[in-house]
Length: 420
Image 1 (spheres, helix red, strand yellow):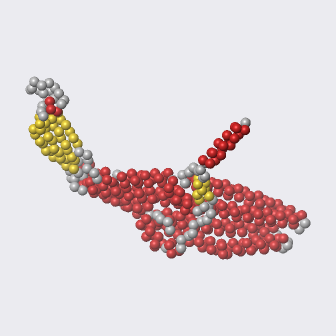
Image 2 (image 1 turned 90 degrees about the vertical axis):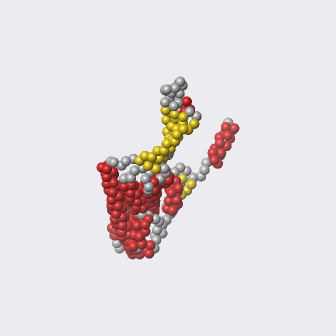
Image 3 (image 1 turned 135 degrees about the horizontal axis):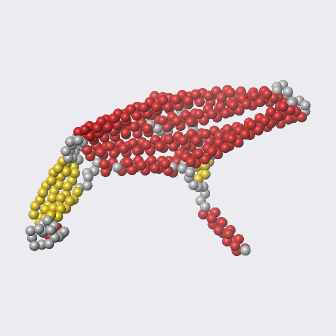
């Protein structure tokens, strides 16, 4: 029995030694973004698609493979005493033809440029996918941080209300207050406990969403958010400067530009199809064991299908027009989003200053005065509840203002296409 227990202990110890410690990430949003960039499967798929599109550029402009054709003539050896055969030296003659198709001048370069535009579009799509993923991570990080701060404030408010309830019970026990005050305090405590449970549930859900945004990695532990990002100075949030950066770096606009370039080159390629492609070749003819003749070949395709080609050219023109209109629409929407986010950020900043420097200190003073007055019997219980609720609202307004700034910053970075 002792041997069995000893063996089990050794196995358990070995397993513990072999187990790798879980990687801890989080605490600040930068570590989450770094992890997602390296490990998220959807972003990895977008990168692979971009590399695949880049690999199509060189083949698009390459010449078609040459064609080898062999013809065995008079395999029955009619007119001679020899029997039928499939050997090149024992038939009437054998013709070897090697041909190469040569596209009209400029077609290969246009095909390569069309493929290059497609590669640029795929690269921009990967950037757009990353900006979308990064924005969702930033927003979820802020929400999780808000939940944790709200839980802390809710616990502090609950402790304070329990103190108020104790005062109400003591006053009622000493005949200085009414039973209704004690009951109302207990009802307020119950409501605050309910809010606290809901906040804890929302925090757990935010953590689960963050794990999903990171690709549900194994053997990874998420550290709770410690702090929010430092906001950039006001000089970096100038509308004119941000608009210029948006026009240059917005992934959607870069994608639209690549699509326009591809449509322009595609239109030029369709128009170049008015000219024929050329096929050239050479064919030695073998008779018996020697080459007796040589042939040269030259052929072109004749572009006679005028109606079909005109429709193809019309399609190319409309595709180009649609790409240009779509870019203008996306530009207008991006500028509107940028303006809206900047306005929201400015409002949130002003609200934070008003709450932190005015409303919150006043609410704290008002509550302290109400508590002191209630203990001395100079104010009623309703004044205490009102002061306490005012403090709770001020704290929530402060948390919301700071969170709104972070969310607006994430939206601005998404539409600009780069970190600020």
